[in-house]
Amino acid sequence: MPPCCGPRPVMRGARWGARVEMSAFHLPYGEQMIVKLLHEKGLKSEHAYTAGFVSIGLTVASWCGSLKAESAGTARADRWGIFVGEWAPTFFALGLALANYEKDHNPLHSATH
Image (tube, rainbow, N blue to C red; front, top):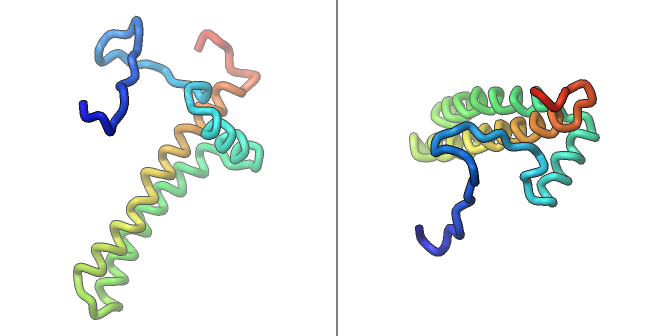
């Protein structure tokens, strides 16, 4: 592995390819605080997932709109589509982090699930 990537995380006791459950407590402290703050402000995982799907639609709309409205051609339309398209994975990752936080901090969720 290249030195720029740092050490790979080691999962002890897990088979290769085994599903490993991650909780919000596995996030670095600063990321936990961001997720906690967003959760306390009322943002739920469903909101982030919805924003991810909406941004996929906006990607197509911005590509088509830029292609038709601007004279710069396909290159500019592609850049707009890629720019807006980068939002979707961010929203989906935020949704996963919020879902894990919600699961870990739900008093009705038992420890056996």
